[in-house]
Length: 291
Image 1: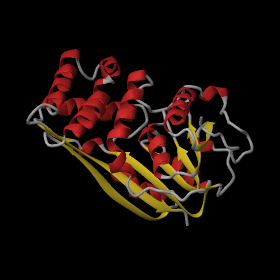
Image 2: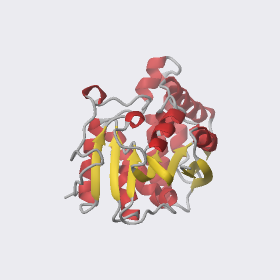
Image 3: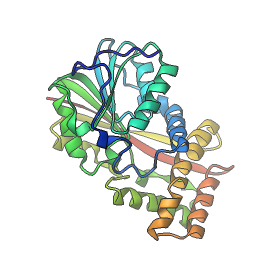
């Protein structure tokens, strides 16, 4: 069973305001069981790529801001056994899934769970040694405000690690026009929801504007082809194509596409995971310091 440690504000398991329950602004992908499975597939497939180089000393006070369903949390704990982790999310439903996942995969980990908004964290200034943020900023209307709020609870000299994707980096073969339109439509839907699916390319200026220093941004590239069947299945099919396919109802409701056009796009994307197909995508991982 997951060991609960007393959080920094003195409560065993903190809950945010009732009006936050289930509310995640800008999260265009929804909160279905299918989406939770997709997030797990993505985290498991990309664990080595995204978490390489991230390991915190035992006893470090680490904040995971926007833990979601815990897909990244389990890998974060596996790479840094012995940390004192506080996991925060604005969705009570996702937080419950994260607790169950960690209890199953890291039963001895010391984790405090907090339901609340990362813009209004109840922790003292400098409460954490390290902050970890993965696939969160892209869903926020004001990522600089979020980073500034996180810098407040990070001690001077502490580090923040931020990982984001960039849908503009998606290159694939064969590349039909309908597939490209489907990806572009997802970018537009996320923008309409207040997010930015192209945020990866902006990590350095965002961190600088929020007051962080010594930011180092490095690309983490996925290339899936016939020589890498695990990536074809785990990333191309179960992560990227599944992500685009999941917004079908919302896409049609906007009137920006038609059922036939959207379904053609998905069919073309699926062909990139078939023999002879390839798929390329770049994530961006940044590490910066609170001066």
